[in-house]
Length: 157
Image (cartoon, rainbow, N blue to C red; front, top):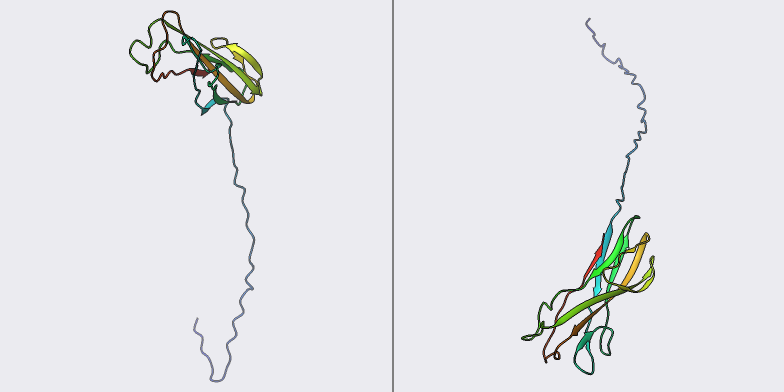
């Protein structure tokens, strides 16, 4: 088909009006919290010395308990501490005739007092603050002058 325009004629083209449509979609989000137990060491402990130089302990004058935060997000976890079998650093013969013991006290989600280290304490869900003490006792002789370093292991299992 052939079209021709006559001079002076006006060509009119009709177009459909443009309509904008809104669009939407749904983006799903998913999260999962797994049951876990997290320990954060808040501060180290300090050992004080007994008057007869046979005991180093965080319970003695000048001693300070070590502190840790324990967060249990589910049930079934228990807390315990393990005393070392020797100082990790000590003057010569510093580990001779020494026995170690740890204990802990907790507040917060779980509250207990002066629990022997190896004893398992069931943890309630939530944040528990642990205060950990260490005692080193020399059965023969005295603790010599020097720096003594020992590590207590705190466990959530």
